[in-house]
Structures are given as C-alpha cells and as structure tokens.
Image (tube, rainbow, N blue to C red; front, side, top):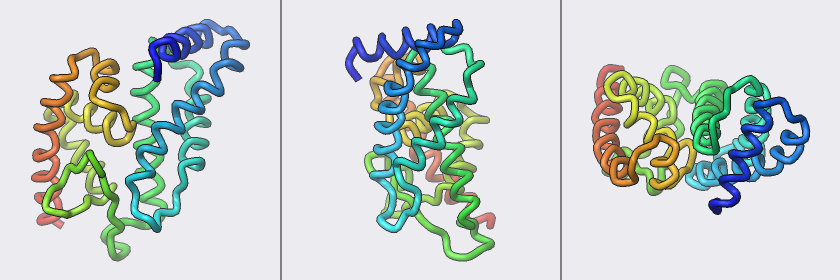
Length: 193
C-alpha cells in the first residue's frame, strides 16, 4: 500500500471513529481491498483442497470489522493488527468447525510458505499452531504478534514493524527466534497427545 493510501486509510478510520457516516462509505472499498490483500496472501499458501476461499474469509472478516465500530481506531497499523487477529480467529473457528481435530481423525495440514515455522518438511496443523502461539504469547507477546501479523495478516516485515512500533530488524530477529520456538512447542504438544 502506498504512503498516500496508508494515510487515507488512517484518515478514514479516524473520521469513522468520530462518527462521520460519509467516512464509512469511503472506507468500505479501502478496507475491503486491504482485507483481500491480507486474505489472499494467506489462502495462497493453503493446500489445494482447502475449502475456505479468499472471498469467504474477506467477507467474514469484513462483517466482524463492521461490528468493531466502537474500536478506538488509531491508524492503519492498528487496523492491520485487528484484521490479522480477526482472520486468525476466523481460520481457527473454521478449522474447528470442519472437525480438523486429532480426536476426529487425520489432521489436515496447512502450509506456511515463506513463513515456514516448522522445518523438515512438516506443515503444522492450524490448531496446533494456535496452541503454540498461545504458549508463545505467555512467554513473549511481541514475538507472538510478529508471527500473527506475518502469517495470519500477510504483512511484510516493514508493515509488521509499523504495526508494532519497532524496527524491521527487530521484526526479523523476533521472526527468526519465534519459528524454532514454535517448532519445538508443536513437537512437544504432539508428543504429549
């Protein structure tokens, strides 16, 4: 997103927060495109037989964002962080509703493309990843946010840095440290089950 588009989104979010109805009308197409970008980057990394489509993910996130009208929007970065969290919740809810739990049968695997958290060719299950992220949040909330924004939000290191108010180098460092930590946590969880 260009700097002017980013500023426009921030301006519209602030105007909407202040009750300007026209701002919401102008905000809808901007929000929708931003959500499509985020969702597309996630769905592109899914397995081929995945049944949740980009449009369905975007529509669900969009509806949930409209319910967030009381959110005290700060800027585009805040919007991206909330959007990433919403998409994570939607995807986890979807995985649970589809019965992708171990007690039901074979696990469906998701791929994390550039965001490979688990090495050695093993693609983590979304529910396992969610459990590991919860454990990581208890140890280091920022590293959890970095993974959430990069994986669920589809943000670049620079965008993630903007959202979190840190440098891109810090994001890269957190990313490098979080991935093996999550891999170990997921292996530990698998052994305990």
